[in-house]
Amino acid sequence: MSTTNKSNTWKLILQLIVAALSAIATTLGVTSCMGEFIPPSY
Image 1 (tube, rainbow, N blue to C red):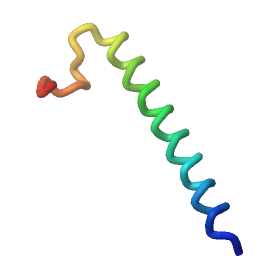
Image 2 (cartoon, rainbow, N blue to C red):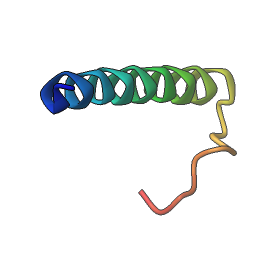
Image 3 (cartoon, rainbow, N blue to C red):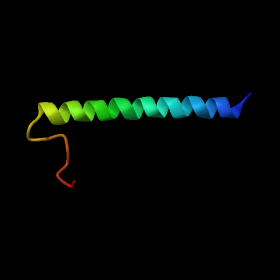
């Protein structure tokens, strides 16, 4: 049972999730010109 291998897998999964979320956010931002999905707090 190597914990390093498990943490590496979780890091990879997290990176994949972040990449997918950013891609979805970019697509939403491009498709909706008003940016209704993005809060105006930025």
